[in-house]
Length: 395
Image 1 (cartoon, rainbow, N blue to C red):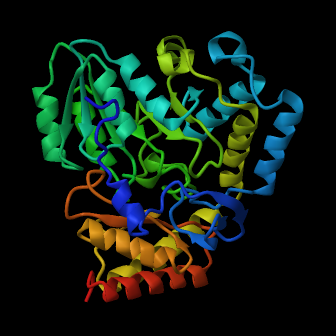
Image 2 (cartoon, rainbow, N blue to C red; image 1 turned 135 degrees about the vertical axis):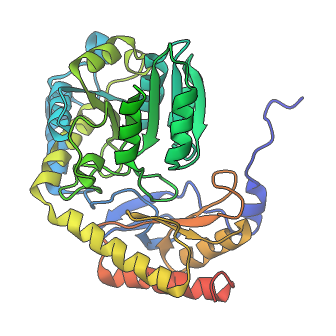
């Protein structure tokens, strides 16, 4: 029996046919959503998560540098013992204010945040109900919890109601969903999910990794997007590594919830504190989002322009209405070859194939940024359309 199990990816095939474009290293961040990549030169970044183009923002950089001068690059340990800084308290207060909650907690990554929160809150006899397309970190948190774990069909409210009716009436019920789904770019039907949770006495957790700074007139997220009250969501989770150009994850909610997580969530108790420069950068980024609303409007303009051109050419972009644009190619060979076509022409974009997405929905996942120029958006659309026609993906 070999020590290493068989891999799901045929990496040897990808490399043999010059189709492997993963773990590429960036040498320099350039203006206007561009990067300099080792061995590839300057490329338009169409595969990243800097939705508002905040990487390299002078105010955010200055905050990180000042934090290094005051605190250095790390802490004396985990938060519960010797690792808590005034910066952490300030960041958590800033997040709570931004998300209109009583308190917040920060952890070392978004993945750890989901796993730690879900696994610590649920007990035997409880039920966690999860959208079929939720992020892997949510799924892993559900698997680690002692609760019964069930899924509902993606954004299917009738199926969600069925799951809620079937849940153990003697246990707690937690519904978990992404706000924006990371592979499809569509938005959870929050008004109906919230209504069903209240009807059936369930709590609601929403992962805003891809909606913070993207949804809502001022970028405050999915509640603002749907004009819902600030207390619609019980557990507001998000990351500090996408729109926010730092590292870490957070949960915002009631003081009771946050106190519990700070003393019970293993990912907080036994994992490193967010480093000082990241904490300071994140805090400054929330200020920039509120001070520069034009970035949110620029992102919407760029998405609308890019998606409209691809849809007009015949591409299926599913139901995306955010910065994530899934360009459906219908097979693994088509997706990886279209990605290669784009990469050879200076566009940093990658194929996403089965088993990450269902067979027949293999795709390029393009991510638009407020930093992209209209000329670069048009160039990317031109290249994808030309490649799609050449390969027979579109007519």
